[in-house]
Length: 292
Ligand SMILES: Cc1ncc(C[n+]2csc(CCOP(=O)(O)OP(=O)(O)O)c2C)c(N)n1
Ligand code: SF4
Ligand SMILES: [Mg+2]
Image (cartoon, rainbow, N blue to C red):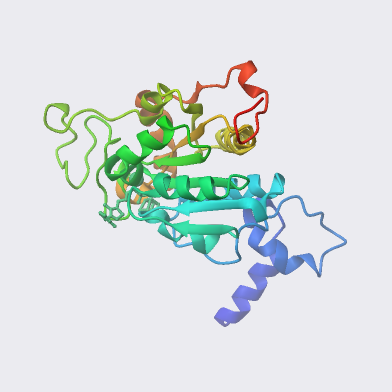
């Protein structure tokens, strides 16, 4: 039997399920009567293969943001700012207007975009090296000004793209390529809890931390993204959604081990949940001039 024959046999055996969605399209036409489509990826994601490693959080969070944009029907009105880091090609995947920003400068770039086009939904997508190292000043000042944007912060505790150097969020004792014996606070300081830090700023309207390592967490993360986009209509300040992201490649783990590592280790330093919620009286809409 040739390789071609084997492929044909396997394809014919496939059943449609969320796990093999790619095959759903291929089979949909011929088996339309037999199967009901229960899941498909959002049309706001482009039909291209992503470059991320297996088990990486970036692809999943891209999908969640794009699902939120599709469900809120704001595709034409959303502008994303892509980072430097593994997610540098976010603009190849998200089917919305996108702007690339230099390392750490995404919130400054988003500030300019939002101020010029206040009716648009503007968000940045940034890793921990980008946002919390080189871009910490921009991040704090943008939130302190209460810029009316959403910041999606992917905290995988390393500089993923450049081969796993220590990030401001690397855990105490964590081995990275620049802390090969583990992060020693006496030498390198402590992991910065960015969400707790920026929640102190009056300009921070909504701050929430999530994971995407299991189904329930994914649903909560998506809800936080939807909240953050919806709150942008209120013009009351910055919404910050932190995702503790898996980086199996640099953590030197399998995707499953990385999922478990988040639950067993990461969340002890970075507890999950809402860190700052709007007060009920803050949920009364105001216009762009600040008049009630
Ligand atoms: C001004 C500048 N300094 C350094 C770099 C090199 N660089 C590219 S990606 C990166 C780290 C990105 O890490 P992070 O933001 O955590 O993203 P991840 O890859 O982990 O998703 C660095 C240091 C750069 N591109 N530009
Ligand atoms: S190196 Fe880490 S962050 Fe980068 S794509 Fe791979 S798993 Fe994702
Ligand atoms: Mg990182």
